[in-house]
Image (tube, rainbow, N blue to C red; front, top):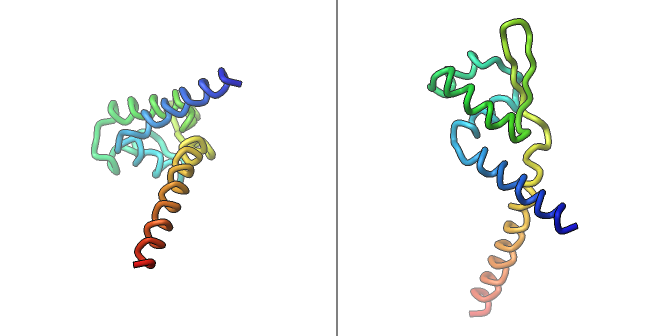
Length: 111
């Protein structure tokens, strides 16, 4: 059980590292809407094909996108559910802060 938790934490750390970069988050947004070829991702990001490819490799290595080959082209798509661990982690803190705000509201109302 402990090893599974450590493994999950390491996976979540890798995903957080992968989405820490703004270009990679933008790629995920684009790829969540449509499957796209590398060359189609260059203009929206304003970076080189090589830079897009490097970002996509990081996302793919961390299970956030998939790649499909069709002839000379490579098409990428976001993986549904790949950010579930991030959502679960942030949900814990959202609940914590909401309870803190509730307590603050009670304190203010009591004055």
